[in-house]
Length: 244
Image (cartoon, rainbow, N blue to C red):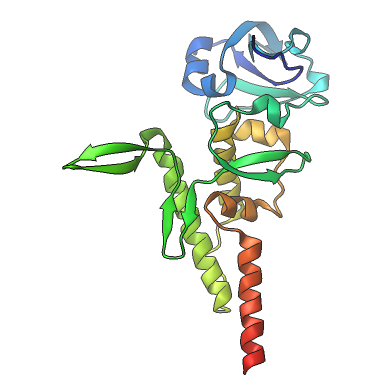
């Protein structure tokens, strides 16, 4: 029997042209798993409250004074909420079939596992995204699975920018290649969605991402230990100075 959790996310769909089943199957099924609905009201809108079946019944209600709600950008009429004093934990949201990765401490003090999607060999990046062996022209080849190609492409882009940034630092050049905070946040949020029942809205409601560490987190997902690499670069410069 599934473990009952005392907390989780709540979803509200305004009454309209999109059915609850269509909304859940198009966007939320990976975040909810098994789910159920009941009539509800959010503000002045009538609609349906949608929750996962593992949520404790006492929390399956709308109480706007005790909750934080925000719209889901990709689905008009859909809102996601969380109890202010009862946010889901890392364990509550962890998927049973997540991708191996690196544990990092987030702002809530918990360790979350970021999937490692790329490994840097020193001679170039190697994809670590989930793959399948395909037999072609007499040989077996490893190919990234279709559903993971978008995130694998993002990983390659982030890896290229971080690698170029490290090279600029090493050569004491002006930094022009570094990925933006926004790019890193989006990438880390996508990574969290691979291992947890969340999307960008849920990650935002949890408030776990530290902007001062977001580049390190993004780097970890593509095989870079940025603090170690920066120290190595600095030590290399010091060593060169001492030998002159």
